[in-house]
Image (tube, rainbow, N blue to C red; front, side):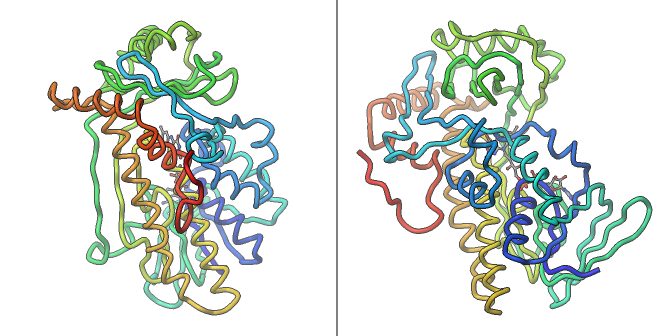
Length: 399
Ligand SMILES: Cc1cc2nc3c(=O)[nH]c(=O)nc-3n(C[C@H](O)[C@H](O)[C@H](O)COP(=O)(O)OP(=O)(O)OC[C@H]3O[C@@H](n4cnc5c(N)ncnc54)[C@H](O)[C@@H]3O)c2cc1C
């Protein structure tokens, strides 16, 4: 078997890249360890930057997103129960985010694949990369007990944090930067209307909470919990009571309670591997970097990575020049590090750390007070939240 680009992983990064390459006439094959239902069913990201929406629009994959996605022009921050608003659109000359679940994005990417002749091999076991530092790499896997191998010109490692691609790079040629946070997020999904038409990020003496949503009738809530928290110790009533305490009286007054149909604890991590390339292997998305979900950046970074990578591969395909491929890692990392910084900062501002002293809590409260009173501070938050430009300067002039 032969293909131009072997893509490992059919998450958002792998599937968006496959659509981009296929549209440009570049042959590719996607290898995914799990089945479609598993990948599509994972409850994860929910907030899309305009850049991600534009990528899906350009791929002709945004019809349902435009119908069902919820554009948000702002969000609220609650500090010990008192709320103020971040006017995203007003502070960034009209930029906004769209609430549309990762499950829906995956459904749209998968649904369109067969008609576009896009090959995805699900249930590919034992995926292994070969000769990635040579001019003729290949990828092997097994499926239904049979061995397969595809020769390719390039490999895109889009297989997430625990995938095989990054592990195939010799440890001596990459630098890894990492921080594991001493807490996790307990998330629930419930078939109840959201308590607010915009998201509420809460910093409270008892810990962080987030009121989010997936639609007008489906709510997504999170609370900060200990890393070793037993989920059995969190029956729904306890979760709702804790949300009410942390989000504050305004949110509580409008909070509709109901049975959760999904409940899980996710750890929080900041991680970057650099460079994002070794030989003919290019890493993209969570395979190369992880952000804590506070800034809603993970899926959005995966989208911008593969946009840069697709542009470089298309340029190489048209002209034979490798300069865009050579610049890929640097170009992607410039955006990645800014999103890492923002996610780290927003996490520190809103969460209680087990080692926090009363001084650190007072400093958080002072920073919240500063944000509430300073247009400059709110503008800095807003322009990072809606997503920094793909290249160059910010074009808007804050009001
Ligand atoms: C609780 C939670 C909330 C989040 N909230 C947000 C948010 O609000 N906004 C946001 O932007 N991001 C958010 N994220 C992050 C976002 O979900 C990820 O950043 C995004 O899924 C990254 O996409 P990816 O394609 O790079 O990796 P993944 O989605 O991890 O996809 C990688 C794929 O590779 C496959 N794979 C792994 N190993 C192999 C192998 N050996 N062989 C073949 N295939 C393999 C996996 O099965 C998977 O399908 C959140 C994440 C979590 C956990």
